Length: 156
Image: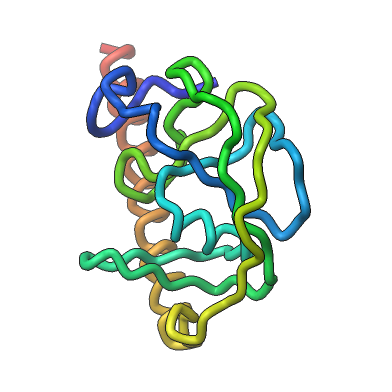
């Protein structure tokens, strides 16, 4: 279930009535509990390619390193606030990635193909990996510092 933090608008204030999408390299009729869905059709299409890295520019252009052709689906059921929660480990802006709390039926919209303009180059991939590594190092250092400070205050 979700962790306590939700950056951005209140989950209950989100417009759950809009269309929800899912991308997968597999042919499906339903998605399982814990699947990722989004209201961003293009992002779901990109997820169908199973990328390990996705980059969204300030102007909304999505680039990735996925290599698998796939399928774009829309969720074929009405989504209620209890059916989804924000992905707790998403690095995207709030509201882009949601996880499902139950199995949901889906309808196939179209097969997908990878567009050349959205492929990340080897240089871009190396830079993104370097940034992610730095971010992870900083996060680990912050957790270590926080833990050390907590131990020091407990021993006082």
